[in-house]
Image (cartoon, rainbow, N blue to C red; front, side, top):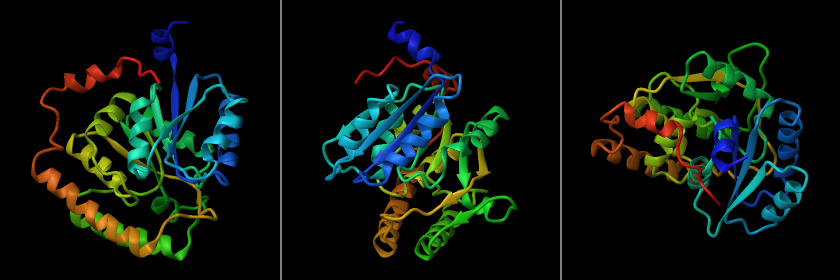
Amino acid sequence: MTQEEFYRVLDLSIVIPAHNEATRILPHLRSIHDSLSRQDRSYEIIVVDDGSQDDTIKVVRNFAKTEPALRVIPLPTCMGKGGAVRQGMLAARGRLQLFTDADGATAITELDRLEQAIRNGADVAIGSRSLASRQRGFEVNARWHRSILGGCFNAMVRLGGIRGIGDTQCGFKLFERAVARDLFSVSTINGYGFDLELLFIAQQRGYRIAEVPVNWADQPGSKVRLVRDSIAMLREFTIIHRNAARGYYSPLAAPDAVASLSNPSPITE
């Protein structure tokens, strides 16, 4: 099979940003492998090592010996979660592209809910703890500092022009390929505020966003820091609005510009 043929038939890409995740990433990789290897679909798993100082790359490459669909993109220095996700999504080859956190706070089994939203016409489907917490049958287990940070950030979201989305920060988002390439090719935020920027651009460009309730469980070893990350998000929030004021996120001039991305040239490692 040629590279071009492989690219056309690849159904799903899963991108996992990882910074010092040697002790947490393996169970999530195993779960993804166990779920997808039983399905009749082509897929790839991309782990973007974000300048880790531990054995993350070693752990992932050892697991790759049993999962040929897994590849690693090593970044020489830490870009931040947003930068790592961007690198992975722009290198992804799947018709659908998911990014998910390395700790597996949202299990891969929740992917079915997001795919259904795409089948129903959404361009972007995002996992939502906010919706899940208000519906029966879902479980959301978050520690107090995450709840505070999420509440503060969602208040900024409402003030900042993101319409109708209760949870911008859940690390479980699915995109149509052309949409992913369009959004990530113009995104600029490398920190935790990158989710907000993506959704802001998506709404500016008229994409259909579906918020989908998902089960979510906070995992030990969280890297979220209440004061530090709140300050960083405020700074990133101002960058987003500065870019918007300059017209950087304006809709594409011609609809064909997005359509032309639906079958891009393969990206080689």
